[in-house]
Image (cartoon, rainbow, N blue to C red; front, side, top):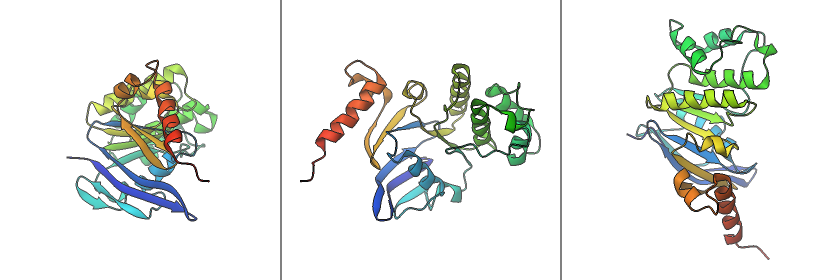
Length: 242
């Protein structure tokens, strides 16, 4: 059964359409990548699905049941949107315990190990580098066995080793059926985990494809080149107003 179905979602802000006829779905174990330029609507779409901002039309269904957003559904959801919401005067470990709903710490310790955080997890979060804070935010999104995890630019501030840690942690969870919805500007990393790509431009999904298919269509077989070609084709297909 489809975990999440988003149908014809639209949103306006002060009369300006910022999301238009958005359609996508998530199955168990899916990793759907969301790519687009700055201001394309990626973060807004995530906020709409999570119920962090409203929308004017469309429908969402979780496991076949209509809901207003995924946080008003029976499934557990994890998310890292924009900046990690952490308490700076607590240790990373205490931040995790604060939001943990379980009775023992096995899950917390497993997440720490998966993300290779043991060297700094018992230090206060105010001492963390940008990359450490980002890892902690990702760890928080993994808590409590969510069935869907939303990650907005998860690789921001991460060094190559940390990126590998996050990638491996994502793939480990997809093997267990967890679905991910990930936006990122680091296309070279996104292509290593996604099975479906949504390209967003001016609040619309202009392409739904796979990494393999879009790279086949690129002049040099590169995802970045393919992405820019799609945007360029859209720009030239849009009629200009006189």
